[in-house]
Length: 274
Image 1 (tube, one colour):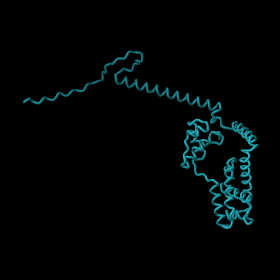
Image 2 (cartoon, helix red, strand yellow):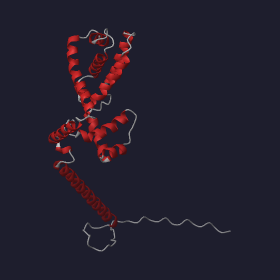
Image 3 (cartoon, one colour):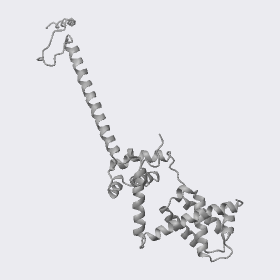
Image 4 (tube, one colour):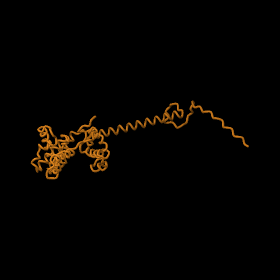
């Protein structure tokens, strides 16, 4: 069964994502350190790793807009070698990408479109070269694509990038309190739609854990009882019991009528003495 988006609380799944990302990039982060910093149990962090992998369909190769930005900037430098503002354009574009983590832009648009939109915003803000504009950038980076349709899509991407910048700037300003209130409201709203089967704070989850513990106890008791019955059956077969239940009787060894001792070989004759 596929993992649904509301099966797990994002705040509880993020530590597992960090742990898994470290292993995928061959830069592992200690699981106990992550659990301690986030104030969660180590067992819960490790157990959620399978849920994250299933949610990703085990596709761990993820494309980030940063690589596309570097590729587009290299292409622009090669096309316009006299222009010197592309290094600054790249710095601003990468800053926009960093701020975009406050939004869901990575889930809405392809990495290439996010990279192009960040370069367009950065180029307009610098504006040192009149020959470098939106049209020349798009023509150099994407060639003969439909400019009008692409420009419309990039306009939607730019709005989300600007939103991420506003959130990042407000995070350290007087608007932070307002953002916190909005985050608290969203957290309360999120708890309503979360699947209670995976929410450790829900009554359904706690009852499910208790039921699993009771099931394990019953299985353990059944297994122990079966082992004891098998041991008694072996004892009856070994000591020739007639099958009667002797749990309350004193222990006694009974004769097995079917027992036939093997004939002993005569001892070898002693060598003659000289």
